[in-house]
Amino acid sequence: MSRAAHLLRRVASQIVQVSNTVGTVGTLIEVKAGCAWAAPSLASRFQLGARGFAAASDGGSRGTGTGSVPPTSSRSVESGDQDEWGSAIITGDWDRAWEIFETTYPVEGDNMPGVLEIMALDSEAEEKAARRQRELDLQEEAAASHVRVVDHLGRSQATGKRKTSIARVWIWEGQGHMMVNKQPYDQYFKTLPRRNDVITPFAVTNTLGSFDVMVNVIGGGTTGQSQAVRHGIAKALQFFDPAHRPELKSAGLLTRDARVVERKKPGRKKARKAFQWVKR
Image (cartoon, rainbow, N blue to C red; front, side, top):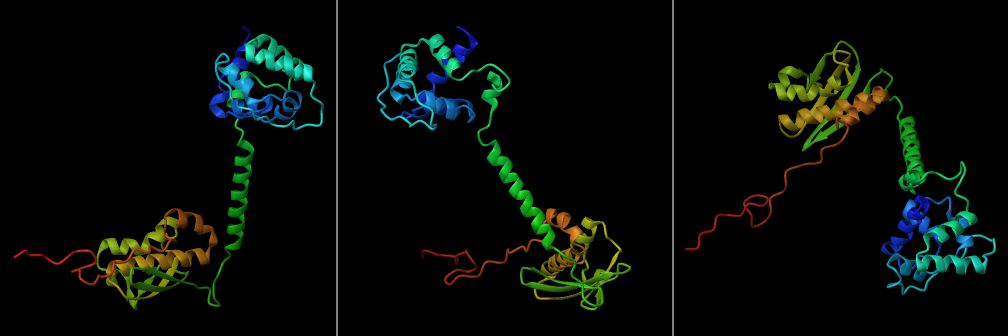
């Protein structure tokens, strides 16, 4: 059996696994090979019900489907070709079926891809490419919407939040001085982890020592306050220079962390903990 006939037999033998109502050779090729280039021409020449394909797939023991798909082209369908094609498929005469197929839709030349190329075709490739392009367009549009925001003194201002803490932050070009509630930040935050929280946005954007910072923070404890300051500094850096946005966003510094302590419930000792229970 030739390679072409073998391919045709594999195609027809698996059509039942896809649907019992497949009606055209064009649909058959699309399902198996994932290509739409052959569908209109083939569908216009060969209009067969699922019964012929089902019978051919297992030697004629199956095939109860009656549906067929109307031709998708205005070209006429030769009844003789249709009957001969159907007979060849049902009887398993793959060489004759392929000969009719090749006569109707030549498979030689530059327009016909190879067997491996057909099997590797992705029917959703165009849709995926269009979706990627739409995403790129949206990203470019979003990037264009971010502009530099500074006041008349050349400062960018932002508000950062974490837990119950709220920090108002002002940054401007300077020598790297940072004041938190009118105190140097290393005096206000006494532990290294809290100090690291505050300078993280500058470390990510490689701007340590390039900005002066003034912060007014209220509410919460030292952890909540330091992370609120971090959030505010990151947003202020984005306003001062939108070019910093990608690296700040990749580090997760622009996202408001909404986690807070769960409230206490009536009849419970805490949010979920129950009171100790004694049977007697």
